[in-house]
Image (cartoon, rainbow, N blue to C red; front, side, top):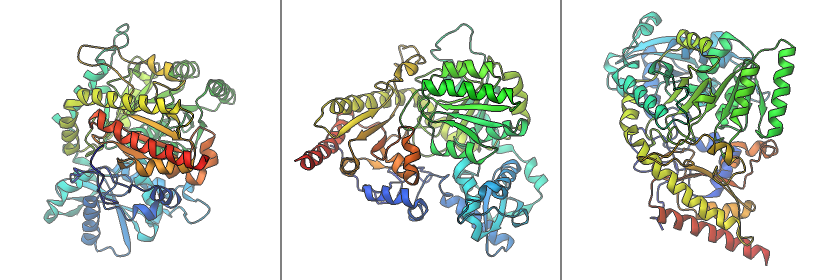
Length: 548
């Protein structure tokens, strides 16, 4: 068994560098319940957290310096690396969709102002009344388009030079958003896309010019979504469950989305009917978005069928392959747009965030998308972040092999317990054991001398009921955190935390509060198995006592 977790609630998971993107949410189920009921009250107590959840302390300090510099009282501000992102924040905050019918209302346009500043770099500040922070901050936490912690750190070192400048001057300086580190990163990504392809006929035509870098995984979805909205303000489709902020972004930015949450064969037929009806009515559907595999139950939708429908109905198909990861699966041939959070297993060290969007030159939409992206894309990915991910990703394949083997071993153990009617383990959700696993295997890369593809580091374990889930969670000696792809194992009561107020809605798509998402790390396999065995036996014993 591993050393007992002693990390304090709200602290970053050790080794916890300055730019750690994790937070230990506490080992007790009760905290997960509280988080689901009132997330802001829990997040307010965190000393460290995911940078989109709340601005990193360096970003907060730079924001305070800006407000002090301009003498603003009763104001708050959010910082952005480009005018494009700052304007999108204002559009978000003033949208009628900010009216939740309860506490939040959209801001009036004159309540927000964009001002430009410079220290080491130029940046934009959206300044607004501090009592409206919760409304505006939804943009920060959902789409991840703000400055990064490394950007803030670099500029805090030059606060003596802080000055207000014209917006034109700020926009003219993009020197640190395109560098040799950016190009090296694109070249590495391209080499991974081309490594062990499923087919060489036709050959992959992607070049580094088709790889766009963003400051977060969510920005790599939001920004293309915004480009498409600018070009064609139609509704989008989300096929299958996805990460909670992807669901929110497609619902809250633009005219909305049509959601086919189960991603079943029946949903394929329903989607085809929806596309047919939309075309008959002259209503353009701008895109179909899908995760492969999907978060958190690792369902693998039939993306070949989605490709067929996207082509037939002239719709963009965007695939998020973050969980499957480039090492394991080759899905770009199905996609018009491939999005990946490189924060996760590609970076691998839970200390920097970033995202990519890749255009497929072989897709039927490439000739439309390429000029659209080149016209709209603004590089907001800071040089220090590019350099950090470039360093960290050098051992990506070696880490991926270990993550694959560790996850498969733990899943095999839990799956064996699920087959025992006396065990509290009800089911494991992972591509190797899911009914949709054949869809995943269809896109697994061929084995090579240097790497054997696997199923990734993420799975969900489902317990019999809330009581056994609580016992399992409380006795599982790993950190409790929302991240995935880290060097350490993390557990997260996903449905309970994300959808506690919408459990009936979530249940339609197979999400239950008795499920716990696991991101397996790089620990010794036998140690991991022992940690899970202890938690399972505690849950089994709890079930046994109740059944007496």
